[in-house]
Length: 508
Image 1 (spheres, rainbow, N blue to C red):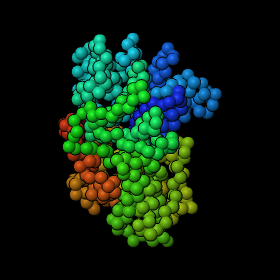
Image 2: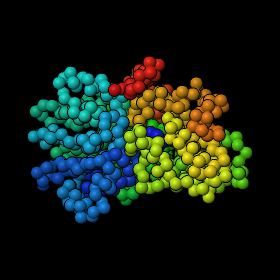
Image 3: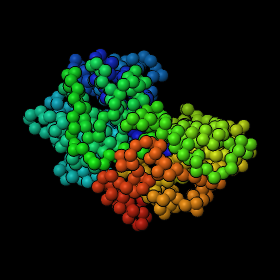
Image 4: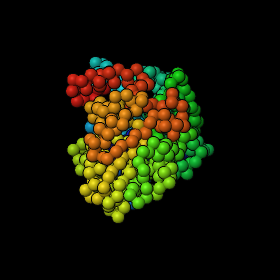
């Protein structure tokens, strides 16, 4: 199940007519909480205060960081950081540790206002180690050893000199060094705001312009919930610059033949209410469920079988699946809203948290053959725990897993926390990803997680459900076709590590 992988980060940027930037950023980040619950933060701009740009960030959820349980503290926080421009971030860790110091945005102070800046980043640089080592050779001191720190130093270098450079040239020069996924929001103490989307468009990034108000966010759903229904996707390889009320969208990188939108955004990561590249996440997930139902080989009936789903990202797929089979969908698992996603805790406690995360409705599951629809299986550990949970506490006679994502057989080097072959259950069992798992391979994986049967989605059905051309999707974790050069070389290194039984990320 996808709870075994850590979720995406989320970025936001605003430029407003009023000094309401802290509240607007708070609202945007709150609606992107699904993309990271480890930490949150904002930087705002106000030319009337000594700290022209100032940053507030901390560990915890958005509401915890903004102290919303104590309205007086929240009001003081909004007042202190009042300004008409700002950037924000919600985080989980793909690179580096989970301490408070790594909460974003990262702010870099300088005497010159155009060299004093703050930035936040969503993605992962595949060539991070190479860039980090080059900086160290140039005597840059790495405090945190993260790709965000590398990006900050590279921007610092590009801003070097007496004359203020054009920011399009700065990011054009800097990003030529980057291989991987990167959405960047940047703001300097001159009040210039920059929003950057990498040339392959790995991660979603939407924006809206209404009068003098400009907002950008990783989730279109966040913009809509803030009252801005007219949004667009920032085109890959372009950047939006906001300066003194003027908004420019310019290309900073050459247009690529290949686009690589991460398929996992539709399967699991993005909010179900978001739209990415004119493809609605909800519709894609429903389509995945419908096509999964066409592959069903059980002679299911309402008397013996019950269809349930793993809350909550699997619900649309399960709905489509049940509708296609003409059977009711029931809630056999209820999510405990007071327990966060399982990736927030360390590896040792992740499995134990499954029992804390869900309540089983025995009235639904007891004595039944359960068809459990889930979005993915990554490592298999959580699925194994869940199946056992359904049998022992739910009283299920049988548990059949139906997975709306094809088998994940290769590591990701673009921002998803699954970076080695050995940790992936399908990589150990599926011999030909393009053809899909054989019946025996599915049986083997089902036995490993304790299920009675298992059916995976197919790659062609996934492409059809998302309704974008296959050449515009990154499915490297499904088919091993990495869209960047460093991704290809890092995969080879990961394969070598697997053969040598070296347990570490290939890009570190």
